[in-house]
Image (cartoon, rainbow, N blue to C red; front, side):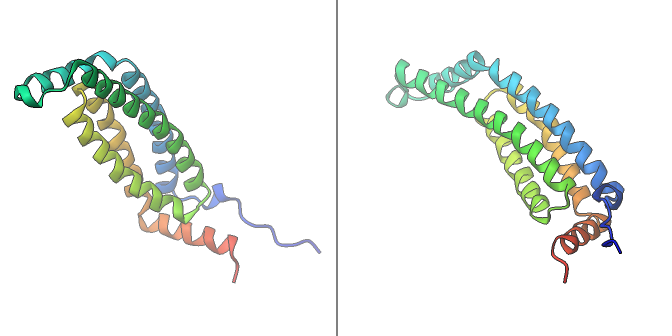
Length: 166
């Protein structure tokens, strides 16, 4: 007598989860575009910081070296965050497709962090970097909304039950 077979996760995934995962893979592509935009934004970041510095009172202005350091640091931070975002999108797509409950919570937190990143880019970066993040933010918000639909919740609960049978 053979042991009962467990259902395949792909058979359990409701449409909202499938669509959320597709959106997350689209998020990977958008994050890669963000990497490219950020990689090409070094000069515009420096110019934006120079304009901000020029608007300060003479006693509060940064020296040329400090301004260059700030521009380099900002560029590096934006680039590192966009690379990390690409990896995180991929990990979240895989984890959510496996019905790991923690993944949809982390996905939700990451959408909020992406919102804060976008605001930061709009206020301290350049228009191009902020604009590049808006589609990513919208895709993430739509994916998270789908992950919290009732059918999705049932999926995550069933997956938990399969991993930890009573």
